[in-house]
Image (cartoon, rainbow over all chains, first blue to last red):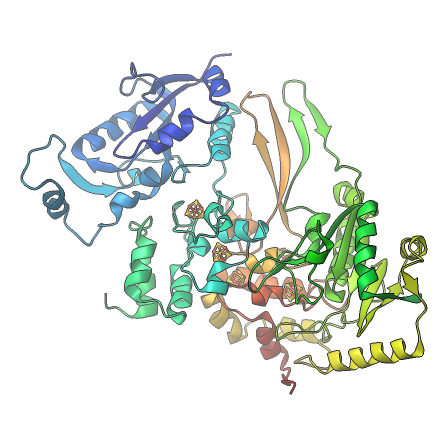
Length: 262
Length: 344
Ligand code: SF4
Ligand code: SF4
Ligand code: SF4
Ligand code: SF4
Ligand code: SF4
């Protein structure tokens, strides 16, 4: 059997998604089944972008170099998968989107010192190249990583989840902490797949898996629930933007509930 | 039908003995406001006076996720994965949940026999428990507040124990095996039970019946309630996942990393999700959130066949567990023109 060539690449990120992929319990079986052409976490001999069948890209585009690399990767891969919250939704580094200029942020952090990377406002990779599949999570779930790779090996494709964490929370038999304690849980607007990991540990969801795709994240409905519980527009907006700053419906939905003022 | 009596103390003893008959699940408190059917390890942990559980009892026979079979594509073979032959004993189901199971039976056994469901269901023991309604209950207008089939035993609360209604041969055997725990019913017990029933009947917020509701719904498909309420909806599916009679599932193939084998699983689905109405094309029968919202109202009240007058048994879960605070009961009252009477 000829092994499919796979590349695992990182743009600006914490490398956690790559680490997660490198440490899934079946990584040896995966390495038997595919040929990793580039995967820094597994081999420092990795280089950038030889031709691959599948490229997994973690991280957001946050520097000029990221952007160049991303175009290179796209050019050399048949299937491109956005891996993790940064790649899919821009990640936490995107929170300043539309609010603060990247030059100001840069100056606040680095002052006048010279650094190599020319900064860009952090963006999800789909803003720049065509993305074939999205594998969300911060970091992604092991079973989903295996599902994606297995689906490619079978010559089929991974189905996206278009329903929220709430449904998994309920199936897990968790009491609802939004209903019972009024905590600002983002489970109703966040893509399922983690089996309500945080709520199962009694912590409200902060939306790390990103908004439910296909325009079925109802930020307006959730904002109106939060508003009724006495939460301010600012606090709701801040929370929804941790992993959702690039969501095109967010501001419009917030305006609808709280009125057009920030 | 036969009636016997058991004291409160002996009920614990009886629960202890039930553990020998199979895996025993019963309502237990899981948070400030919520209860769930859980494995009953310590019989003292049981919550006799619970209003409703988060998860409906159907999950014991129709789990939220199960593997139907595994497959090998190179050998072109399927390996069926039938459930273990174990007995599940469910103690403490309210009458609405018992009817909920009967509705499940009608879909998964009478209509299209489902071997997985059947296998789990055939050995099960179902024991009912009387209850007092809270603000979310409307089983009475659904006419399932008193259940006459679908249980092996039914425990009616008395001041000093339970009056136990025996429903099946299995129920007879259970009481016979523990004849040291059961006594004869006295005239006073019967009066106490009737007093309880009268008190209970007076606690419902609604009265009459909703048998005509399905027609009201068919006639008022364009009612403004749908626009107003669907707008609030989160599309989260909590209402369907907690419903004792929702039965929609999705079937998925999960391939293995060997590129050869895999498994076919079924998972609970919800009509509140976009892909539930998605077919090849890609056409969607229920394109908008409102379309999806309306579907549930019709499914629960107008699409049912013969088991009861509706597929909604009035348990109140979809309202209590809706994060958006949407009241199914109030919305249905609006369409049906029914009037609430708040009990004193
Ligand atoms: S706790 Fe959060 S995820 Fe769970 S049901 Fe409530 S809102 Fe949904
Ligand atoms: S519950 Fe929310 S924050 Fe936690 S892992 Fe799931 S999506 Fe992420
Ligand atoms: S529709 Fe709501 S009230 Fe009716 S049976 Fe389902 S969960 Fe209970
Ligand atoms: S169509 Fe909706 S309401 Fe009806 S059974 Fe399916 S999920 Fe439940
Ligand atoms: S539980 Fe409430 S918010 Fe969620 S889908 Fe059902 S009606 Fe909509």
